[in-house]
Image 1 (tube, helix red, strand yellow):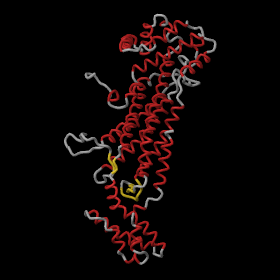
Image 2 (cartoon, rainbow, N blue to C red):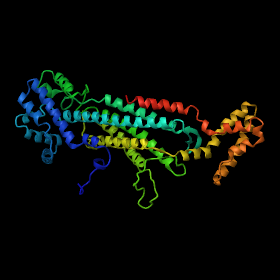
Image 3 (tube, rainbow, N blue to C red):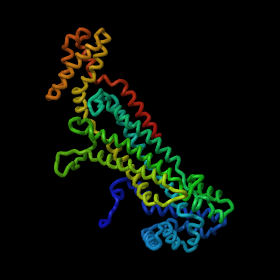
Image 4 (spheres, rainbow, N blue to C red):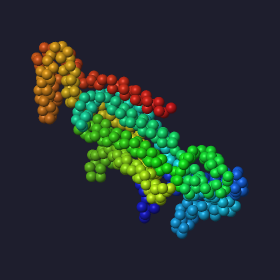
Length: 461
């Protein structure tokens, strides 16, 4: 609709599969499936007739634009969305309509449906995270040995490798995968316990309401909390959204680092850029990292959502208040849609990551010699030099070299140190040049990078 507000998550962010899962039709289909399951078990127990239960099951899938419009019209009058769906559904069920929702309270239906959707949404999320893990693992293997300047305080530090830098993100992502998996394993529904969780209403229908609930748990394939109020514990929502926010944290850092490395003065990484992609309406030459910026924007939003879920859990006073209802209509869906969008976007970037090896080598030539002086210092001290005196010699040459760089000249540090008699009295020129080659000063980074890549690949099985 172009004449009223529509959420960007409706058309712009998130996959079709995730949007469908949180759609109005899916919600109402699931509501009806629970009413059908409830009637089926009640028919087995002789509470309703088999004909009534079969009629309800027959029409459970009849969720159309017309039926939703009818439910919305009823809701406009009675101001209760679930009860409006009950009435619209009952109109379609000429035999069983009168026993739909028997013994249940609204949250017996809504909270179990929310649990089912949380579980399905986590399955989609975990599948997309697996793809991202695999993408990182492939790039780590590809670049495990490529030396690059590491930065601390956003200043050149010592060399690392491109693969080892990528391994940091994968390592965090593996933690996120564990947290999301744990959240998925812990999903439980409210069950069928009535208005305040005591099963009193069901006790009026059967001698053993716990047995009725156990049958429904098996039928739905959904575990239930042992104790609830009118709702399932809202801590579950917080755990789920917090795990999604952890995922957002990891991809946020990756995207932000990429944005730094894509700046032309560094120019080592860049995200894929389409042949006809426009970077700026005013500056045709721009190659802005718009996908990384989108990731950071949505991740920043997702990071704020656990607080809403925290408040819902903490402020669920006594056996239930309704001040969580409105925001849960927004937060649960948008948290998953945001996570879905940023995960898929990050996967596309990682798969198409452009590493400018010319720029990588240029920056190593420019800044690597400073880091490699540590190797030279240790070598000459081992051969008898005074550590403090040699430290000062290296410092003097380093300051001169920095000044040359700032003047736009090439780094003269290696030539200067290899021509200094104070250095050459302890080591030959050839050995000194070899030590000042920073490409070899990456420690065991390649080995550690490949180890993390294996962990990422193993998560696929």
